[in-house]
Image (cartoon, rainbow, N blue to C red):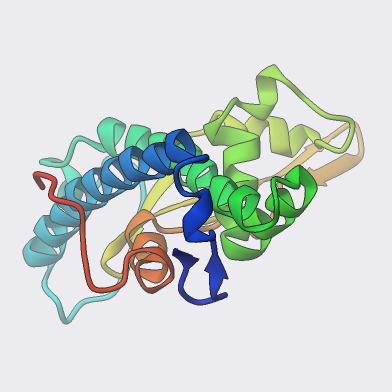
Length: 202
């Protein structure tokens, strides 16, 4: 059974019954990921139709182009998607690499690095509420700022970095966390769901 078509990772057919619950988890997580993808994709299409396909720009905040879009729900979709997709990818790695948790985490970092980092600092819990020694003041402040912008036809999280200065010391928030839900999902299709999509409403 192929569980990653790009890296050619397999779960032997004779182990499918043993890992029934894990495979069932992958199935329902996939359906949730597709559901969130359709919801956000449809809203992106509505915005693009309103501003025109021939225009490029960066929109953040309460811009007129976004007035009909429930941005709070889109932000929640990013939270839900990040946690769900990290669970999905880590489970694939865990199954493929003989239940080795360390290798599963390495696989997750390789497949969706910006999503994993954003999930760690924002999506699973705000860094502000559970800081690590490596977190800067800018990281903590950025973790609770509204996360989304609309850039060239898609919503993105973490499109900018934050720099703070206090008492002569400056800090900058984490880089390399910028990601689009719809672009990420489309990139994962050939890896996990080539040629088929779960039947979900969108």
